[in-house]
Image 1 (cartoon, one colour):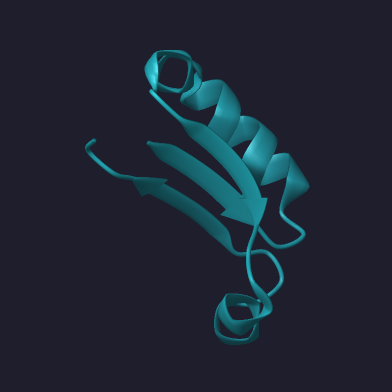
Image 2 (cartoon, one colour):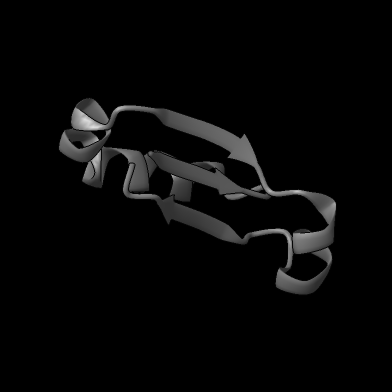
Length: 55
């Protein structure tokens, strides 16, 4: 599973998706999601999150 998320970092998410396009294509599951407010409070509005879980 591969997940990408962010606050208001829309351009950065677009770049990250382009860099990881092969991994996204081959992932069993891909999710794109907003960063929850609890993360945003601590990390800031331009935070970016990438998570990989080996299934």
